[in-house]
Amino acid sequence: MWSPRWRKMAEESAADGKSFNSLFGEILDWMLAPLLFLWPISIIVTHNVANSIANQPYDQALAVNVRAIARLVKLENGQARVNFPAPARLILRADEDDTVYYQVLGFKNELLAGDKDIPAIKAPDNVVPDLVMFRDETIAGEEVRVAYQFLQPIDSIPSRLVLLQVAETRNKRSTLASRVVTGVLLPQFAIIPIAVILVWLGLSRGIAPLNQLQRLIRRRRPSDLSPISVTGVPEEVRPLIIAFNEMMARLEENLQAQQRFIADAAHQMRTPLTGLRMQTDLALMETDPVQVHRSLEHISQSAERASHLINQLLSLARAEASYEKIYAVERVDLEALLRAMLSDFVPRARQKNIDFGLETTGSPLVIDGNPVLLGELLKNLIDNAIKYTPEGGCVTVRTIATERAIVEVEDTGIGVPDTDRERVFERFYRVLGSSESGSGLGLPIVREIAELHRAKVSLIPNPCGKGTIAQVVFPRSRGALDDANALDLQAPRSTAEQFPPG
Image (cartoon, rainbow, N blue to C red; front, side, top):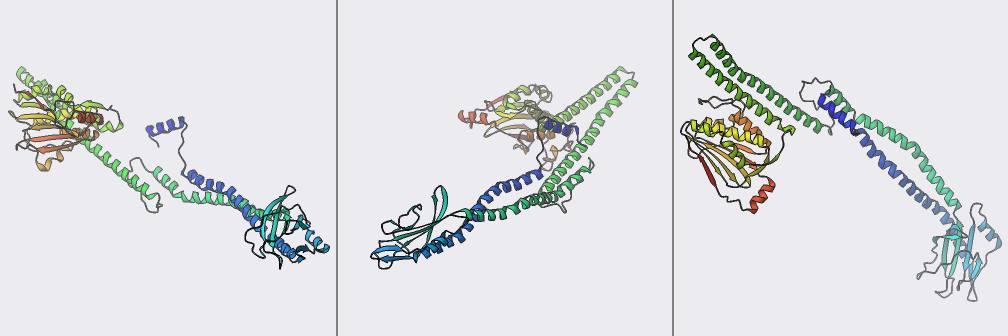
């Protein structure tokens, strides 16, 4: 069954007039369209080949006639003469299908015998003896095939030539060519439909594994995320199945992570709620106003911890859901954002007698991001620094402008061991030996939001040997980086603001 979301997408696609492409139809189109395109071309080529085939035997017959007439040409008193008896002329013209013309022209292109309708042709520079040539002409509006030969009688001057020509209409040739074309094309009318049917059957057989795979996936239960076997899968589909299995593995990993998160969140919520319930029961049983007031203070603290945990869970859920593009991206000035929120932490810093300061570049440090999520990121970093820095310590927030925008929160707190610098980004993980209470969600929220903004977050040991530097490196906004280069902000003017302990 489709989920409501997928059903809605399908309905919207149908409403827009869009349809899913058919792989079967696409392959069939690409196979049959070239075939239908090449078929007319094959007809033209077949017709030309048929004409060439039809010309060969009839050209040979014309050449035989030309050579027969050449043997009748004689040289008498320096003049060419043709002794062409009547029976020979009758045999030459005895053709039921075509009209035959012949012509003999003398040295001065005078007509010695035959028909004057055949156009004369100029002699070439070099005459090859006994060579019969062919050309196409038109006589009385009818196409004819002409065979001709230039003859040099014996004992005549080399430049004096006799032109012999025999022309024939193309009826027999056209009939033979039509028979050849018909004999070739008629089988194609039967072969092409059979080929289409065979292609259809072949494609149906070829995509059968896809249909089988579709049925296999449809039969699966919604909770079955096990990989699909690639045994027997066609080579072309195997990369798709492997990629699908990898996606299902990532989905199963995400679902397991969500289940662990829900279990851990329920366990974490149980502690403050249990304490809240216990303190409430104690307060109801007390009659001493002092004890009741003390129980109310404990209730207030438990409620505050529960509220903080719920807010952290909501922040983490909002950061994880940001891939759905539910937040707006805009140009954010990190320095302005820091100045706007630091005043909220001054009272807490003064309560612990912490030297709290801000070091900035003195110029806007702009990135592309969401101000709400970025504020949550910075708030968690500063909150952790103040929480885990002992009384009389120092917390410094600074910004650095290079090709990237860097925010650092430096403290002189308990520090993070090397073995725990990656684990502290896991949900609900807390460093041992800390007396401060916490949810273990602050740094996971920081990493989720940083990855959303294509930023890198890391924990660096404080060079002074005590505490930690939490560093977040953001990509600069393209337009802001161009402005910074124009203003020569590679060596910015640094300003510092101090919030001395009270």
